[in-house]
Length: 450
Ligand SMILES: Cc1cc2nc3c(=O)[nH]c(=O)nc-3n(C[C@H](O)[C@H](O)[C@H](O)COP(=O)(O)OP(=O)(O)OC[C@H]3O[C@@H](n4cnc5c(N)ncnc54)[C@H](O)[C@@H]3O)c2cc1C
Image 1 (cartoon, rainbow, N blue to C red):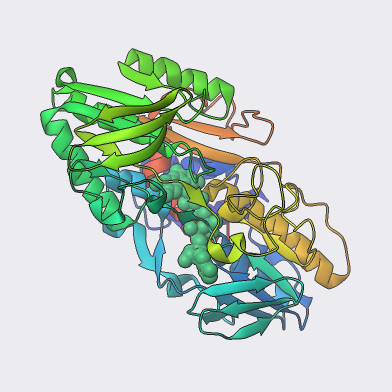
Image 2: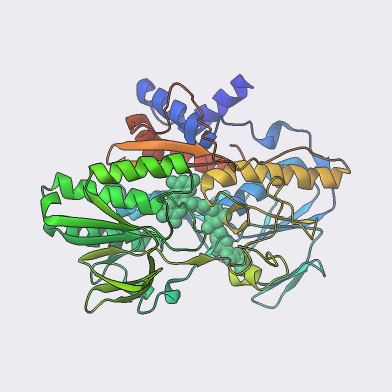
């Protein structure tokens, strides 16, 4: 096991020539996202099958699932459906938005990661019919399946903020690192202009479920640090608007962030949800428990509401009631990622209606579990593979420092290197993980090797 793990690490970091730097990266990668890199499925004996498996979405979860399935199955037909030609390494958007990386760092080609033998349909799924075991594409093609893996991510809903429009990103003091590589780069320009002058910076997060709930906090810390480095912190006010009564869903992390914000003079408002924006007057209006509140700004980092893509939200796969029904997340079992009502359907990644996750780190641990159950079904066996909610957030607290926060469904901190990397300490090694080690490990995950 240890030998296999080292081979995987060698594969990810083979091109780094300085042995000391390589050692740090390898340690970091092993720690990344609790990675403790598991051997990929290539070594396992293949299961023969004629099944047709459709995978919806070729992002982090869809590619990882297709890669694992193709290595585990012999003879099965695997169809991956996604119109997106560019693969976007989204965890890098924060770094682009902070001026640490160029946008090219996060862009590659989806085609690079499609495993041999997997059919890629470059279109979108318009309709999912789990009662009829078929999906219908936007081009009108009906595709029957034996098993379905949904990895369609989530949809950013800028239009739910009155006055906001994606084309405003980078203009009128408006930033949003979530939108795209181009949006993240434009956000860097807007944030940098703010850091040059000072003024009032407004930060926030939406009231919906969201991907990487640490990113709004990271971007607040990074803006503060740029102001400090340019000697303009005294000319600036930074305000963070939390959507509810906490800063992060894990209480101990929330408290740590609250203390760091206080130390750095970042003012916090609780229970503020962005409702509308007036770019001309540079005023943001927030919903509060007591009505609305206007906040003027020189720079605002807008993070939009998020919900399931229409094809899932409008399908029977969504939760039927409860907290996740309106936003349309998939009703899957939180331990197996199997759909609660359609046992031949699995949901992985951001689309999964589970209590924690919506990170690439969760994808890393969810996909092998879902795939193991699917392959066990094909083989006529059962699997006891269980996803316990592992997720991680390299919470950047300034340039060159981060806290590697790893936790599970129960809010337990589950550090990969207890005693070596303390989760609530601002460490250089955790920054290295975020800026250098995460991406190679992520790419290995897409290829089904991590
Ligand atoms: C700013 C930012 C910072 C982040 N930081 C981190 C971090 O530090 N660490 C971390 O682990 N994670 C981080 N993440 C989160 C991480 O990137 C996502 O959780 C991860 O990409 C989820 O994978 P996914 O496969 O569910 O979705 P995605 O990777 O988004 O892929 C979804 C795919 O589905 C496709 N799709 C959508 N609808 C359809 C349809 N109808 N038919 C066919 N295809 C469809 C899309 O085109 C897309 O290719 C960050 C994300 C952002 C935006």
